Image (cartoon, rainbow, N blue to C red):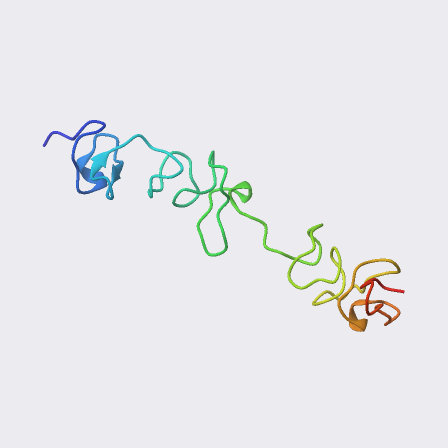
Length: 120
């Protein structure tokens, strides 16, 4: 059977010559990072590879560079309930003097200023 060309009507990827059917538009489309299909060099559907969107946890990847970094206490960012960058909150490293804190437990010296929210 002859496969459909770009912009022709399709119902499934197998209908298209390039194997890329946009099932919402119901037409063959050029592969892209927003087409709802794993194609090109994507690690998973519309992520990784040449796509600007990195793949999240539990998504497939072809290389480490396909994956978004999971938040951690060593990623150089304030996230996951940390008092400041990579300290306090769930991290074993406590925050030092003048670093941001939410509670006394965030600070190495156990003293988080109540209004300034910095370790004193």
